[in-house]
Image 1 (cartoon, one colour):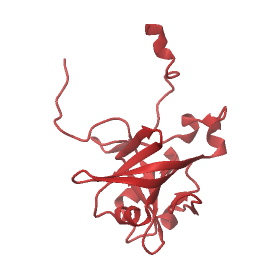
Image 2 (cartoon, helix red, strand yellow):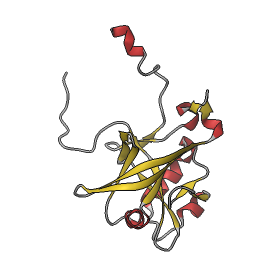
Image 3 (cartoon, one colour):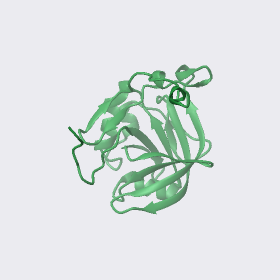
Length: 189
């Protein structure tokens, strides 16, 4: 049957549905949903998020040199979607979503108390890529709700992250556990 060529498109799976936390120039906490992001370095630990220049969060990251990545649970999918369709210039997204803005002690950005996973990032690099600008943040801390931990480690099944599929524009939940990484492949050796 073969593969169907889609051309140059933003298709990859999964992409995250992250809530990016920032303070704007006036100090107002804001959230923006972003899917263009991921881990980019292990040492130092760094993550990226890519935003368009007109976005309210773009200016906030440029000014404050910091952002947080907040991973919401599946139950908050409507809130995550809302934060991606309404501008922080026009709405208090924390208030509308019923979220609590917590001032990070490590970076000049707020995080969402109600999200089971938060990553606090200090901006270390900005790369203009065209329509988007990639922000590289050095991870200063990762915070996980105690209820989302298992055997001293974050439990993806308890966190229940939201996944975004760019081509069909739908959100999905995490699938079933397929096995232990760096282990299940040993049977092929």
